[in-house]
Length: 149
Image (cartoon, rainbow, N blue to C red; front, top):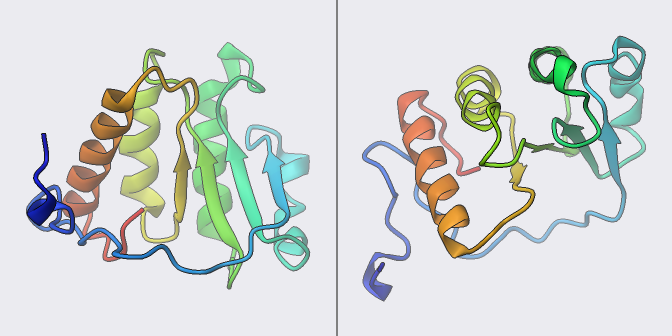
């Protein structure tokens, strides 16, 4: 169990410190993008001018045979787009899926500095959140991400 005096310490050596207060940011319109489909990725540069958040969905909406293509498409979309003040989120695959670990390793490694939020689906308990939080801190440290995801 984490003691209160440790709440604002980084979870890994070299990881950014957790935010003391979440930034106040209006997120009224979240647009889900299936990143394995080029025709939808191609619309993202115009979409960022109209929405508050672009969310690359890697989870249930993506067929099993397109999971790797969706992850690669998300990374390509994130690299190719200037999001400005628009948030970049991803909805990763569930922790008990065979794709979850690769989702985080590859995405944080490639575009962790652009990523604002990881949406964790099918949370079964606080241990799932603690696990992902620790994993993200380790990946942030490894890839020199300076703002916490």
